[in-house]
Length: 119
Image 1 (cartoon, rainbow, N blue to C red):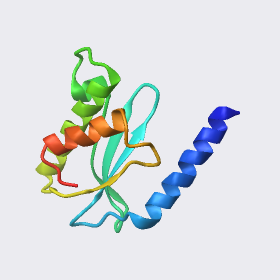
Image 2 (tube, rainbow, N blue to C red; image 1 turned 180 degrees about the horizontal axis):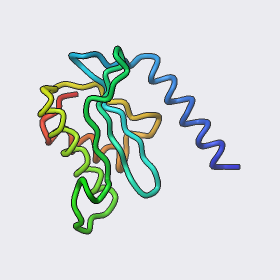
Image 3 (cartoon, rainbow, N blue to C red; image 1 turned 90 degrees about the horizontal axis):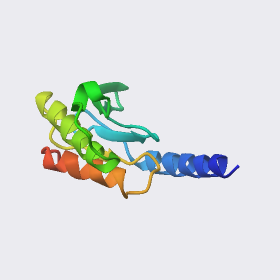
Image 4 (cartoon, helix red, strand yellow; image 1 turned 45 degrees about the vertical axis):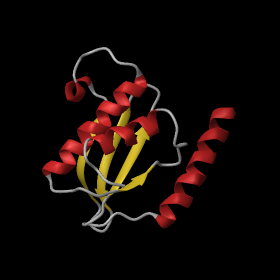
């Protein structure tokens, strides 16, 4: 019961934030999804509805070394920033997807900033 309540709360926050945030060609949206095991980031152009770059905590992408979840999130942030740079994107709008800006979400954002993205 508590998990359904928590999910409904996050969904309401997500839609409230998405009313204001739109990703364009010049300034796409960096969307984050967090699960219990992994973390995923996408850079999305909302005008065309296309994903420009994506990264995840999949071991094939970030390597096999042992890291805790926040370190993994930081590595995913750096990876998505690197992929964005390759496509010519430097500024994005950060969409935390209803999650609190804390822990793994904050770590991913800091990793993306270290990788060269501006938001």
